[in-house]
Amino acid sequence: MKDSNRGWAKQLESLLKQHDEHEFVINIDWEHYADNALTCSVNGRRIGTKIAEKLTQFDQLTSVKVIGHSCGGFINLGLCEGLKAANEHMKVKSVYLAPVSVYGGIFWNYGTQNFGRCADESVTYFDHEDKVPGSNKAPVYSEGVDITHLKESFDYHGSTHQWPIYYFLKINANN
Image (cartoon, rainbow, N blue to C red; front, side):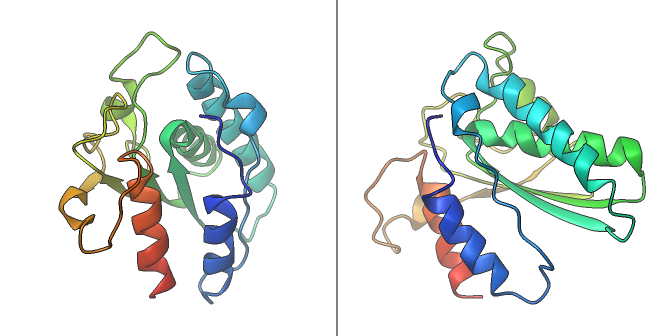
């Protein structure tokens, strides 16, 4: 919600480009579609599907790793669904950072019941003290990593919803 690709996403993009296993990195600017709690999930899923349509044009593409925070988890879902629909052999790894669960402002448990469902591998980093719906636990189809207890060792004092981003950036900076 109301996030931009100039902050943490830009930092993560730089970190990922430093690793040889990432041939290319795409950082999505969807801030104008993520400014409303009732529509960001639907917009995110549609954007993910559109990105998948573009990526399937690359015949040499065999695997994708997608990382989404909060409502951006729905981009992960749409991208995975689109890629798998076009090529069931495509390898998809989804990383969720405190993903919000509410879809369309109506379906409160949609994310926790569906995130990671179509991915070959899925992991969710969360803080069980987070008050954002669904962001405080792992979805059914995703390996959960509860990082709540690590805040003190990382000297983190910010928002529980932003903590998984900070943690993910720190662990990737050290790899």
